[in-house]
Length: 127
Image (tube, rainbow, N blue to C red):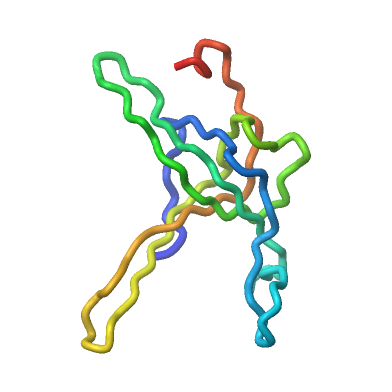
């Protein structure tokens, strides 16, 4: 399954590394911008710390760092340390199969159309 929509409003996302152009290795070993096969656009990659928003009566989770591919160019306001929201976030899955035909690895990756500055108040940032 590809591009599975999900609701990300239950998380706070903080940029831990500024967005960069997504790169790939060319046939001759050089790093070149990775072009989206469907649109021809150059996607960006951003590292985010995703932490669940606190829920009353439940212990808060520590969160984790995730890598998100963004199809629209992030603006200059998206910098390290800023809080963002994901616009149209989706999940994708992957798996590798060994020579014996068994699944040898699997996982998921995140993609969003864009990032926008989050409207977090001081109380929400401290939580």
